[in-house]
Length: 245
Image 1 (cartoon, rainbow, N blue to C red):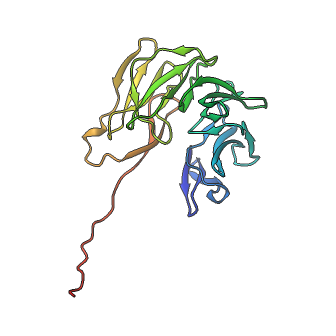
Image 2 (cartoon, rainbow, N blue to C red):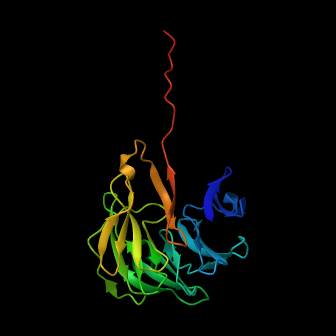
Image 3 (spheres, rainbow, N blue to C red):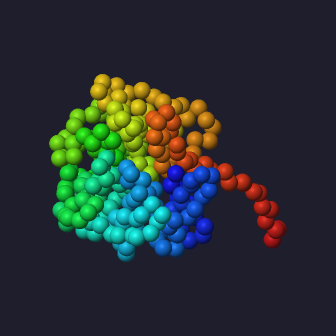
């Protein structure tokens, strides 16, 4: 499992394997704001680094070495994802033509625009036939949209997802459904079954007193569990008596 954590100068990238946590990218090398995207073979990572006022895509080996920038013409807006064959990365961002969704060839070549407009945290189906993403964020909600890899639009039900920092949707391992965040502050998890286009609620976090904020989540490789992080407010309130004047 890869996750973000800080030892002082901003979030670095950590790897948890066999009960041991190892920092493979230090925050002092460039603090990370979004979780890394892991390639299907587990051998490469895609991270977003800030360079001046722009955010660029960098590919690393799984141990954090060999960083290589790709598609530097795109100012990446949010988390990215790999194609099932590991040859492409899909990203939302901006180039000279404005906001859009882009397919980026991993082994060199120019990015290809797949869709126009705001594209937040795209995810590529393990089946290879669908890319889902959140559209323009209005009032803390964004429409859940989808296209084919060649840019052909796919009609989904009218669903408003919550654009969490680490992404608002994930495919299940066989690509037959999308798990996404929905609901006001509760940010409950819902499932969209793609063959039937039926939606059902998976969690009821709204019953908890301290709702917290979900930063990122994923679906486990067996499709049975959701792993997510949640930040809760737990500050103490102190009363300080001021001296009389």
